Image (cartoon, rainbow, N blue to C red; front, side, top):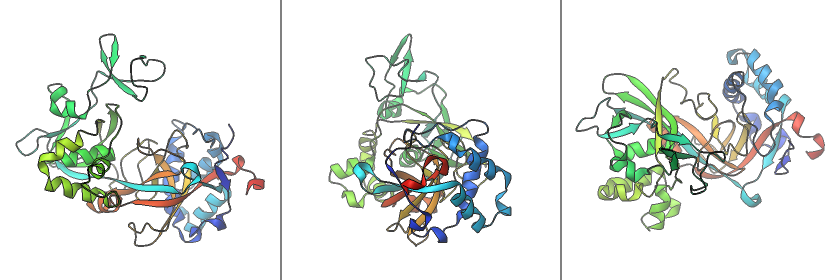
Length: 370
């Protein structure tokens, strides 16, 4: 596997703000992936960052616990094992970052008059689809389908499910009070649930119905309801609050429906276990296009117009530990802001141009390309 020419070798001196970053926080996130890969290696992305090239870096990361490593030592660790490589966006343009978070909402273990919106577990008749079992008649996009006898057909979409297509199957994990809250949990792919019986629970992504995602912001912009430049999670929520009679009309335009599984909250300072099978680290985990990139890759993100995290230009080392259906392209990332309302306020406004620098294992990029 050869490294894609999209990667343009740089030096660490080329990274704006590199010396001022908290490299120890990034090292802690990287170290979590270093332990996970002992169980199951990550798949190498199509751009040629070979997973095996991380072997030495992962081995060293596992030998030292973060409290015994200083920020300077963490910076030296990354500089010793990696070389930064700039990667441009689509057609060589600048990259784009958005934000995501883990909502924290009140929920009930049983349906009540107030709590009537379910979060559902994966149905038994939902099957994974790939090129080996895809019927010719099925949309090539679909990665899930419904097993009906000996046939595979498209699964019911969001509108059908919310109108009762899966009622009576006992799939309800918990019940929420607000349909819009439930939708944004679908978008984020996880949530912490403050249960009415006193428990703290968590739901994380298990599967989806398979149809294409259509964001309500795009729909509302096309309808002339919210100017595209003003589309944020906050503006979308405000519109739904002002137009409760149109919530279904807009949300059902997004045919994709998410199913969840229950999980424990083992460390309240960390987010849910995501696609890379490690807990997400607030402000240090990034979702990338997993078809192109290799999980565990460090990315230095330079987004000078993004100040929502700490009122300073966003220049941070992040670790690729998640993905998402809307995250496509070589310089496209989703920044994990954390859990709860404060994190949601940050994530909801993030849509900024950014330069992406992948930290590529030194064995994969020669000094001649620097």
